Length: 111
Image (cartoon, rainbow, N blue to C red):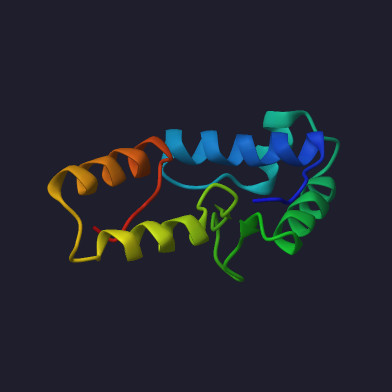
């Protein structure tokens, strides 16, 4: 994604990714505040709102712990890989190469 993040925004995204990976659910604003040593929950909320506006994060309104990082999902790349993998003209070797590349990029394919 070509979206430029500030240092603090990058820290917040990384914190959310790490927290979610370790806990299987996203952090609360207060957990982000504590984890990054920010001054207030409102400071976290402002950063989160900016990241949502940039298309880096997604949040389900009214749902607790619903922050989802879209920054690493690469939807355009996933779409291209899925289209290529659905081609009937691919050899087993080509399919293997594509799947290995998708795994290296940590893409969540439909396959």
